[in-house]
Length: 192
Image (cartoon, rainbow, N blue to C red; front, side, top):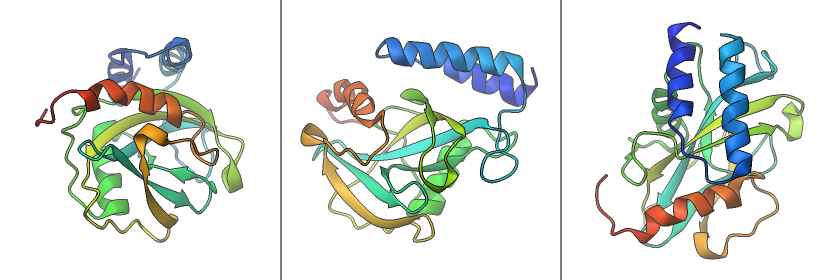
C-alpha cells in the first residue's frame, strides 16, 4: 500500500460508524484500500470505476441550516465537494473544493478536521455507473451570508432546515448524515 492510500485507510479506520450500513461501507472501503492503490480518479468520469471523493457540507449550527446546491451533472441537491486528486490528502481536497466551489477559506470548526461520515454510492445522472467512496467533511457557514456556488457545477443554491429536511432529490445518504451530525449541533457552539 503506497503512502497516499495508507493515509486514507488510516482516516477511514478512525471513523466511528453511526449504523450498520456505515459500518459495512467502512469495512468494504478498508478492504478495497488494502487491495489496490488505484483509488484516485485519473480520467473523467469513471476511471477507475471506484474512486475517492471529499464532500464538504456547509452547516450553520446556530440556525440549524445546511447549504446544498443543485448539481448540474447529477441533477440532485448535493453538498459541495469533489474528487480527490491522485496523491492528495482528503482534508486538502475538502479545503480545495470549498475554495473552488464556495469561494471561501473553510472553517472546520463544527466536527473538526476529520471526516464525520463515509458512504459508498453508485452515481446517478450523466456520469452513472461508477462508485464514489465519499468522505464527508463539515465546515461552518453563516445562513445570513450569501454564498455563490460555482456556476459550472451548480445551477442553484438553497439553505435547508436540518430539522425538517426531507428531499428525495438529494444524496441517498443525506438523512443519515444529518442524524450523525445532530449530536454536534446539540452541543454549545464553540470552536472545535
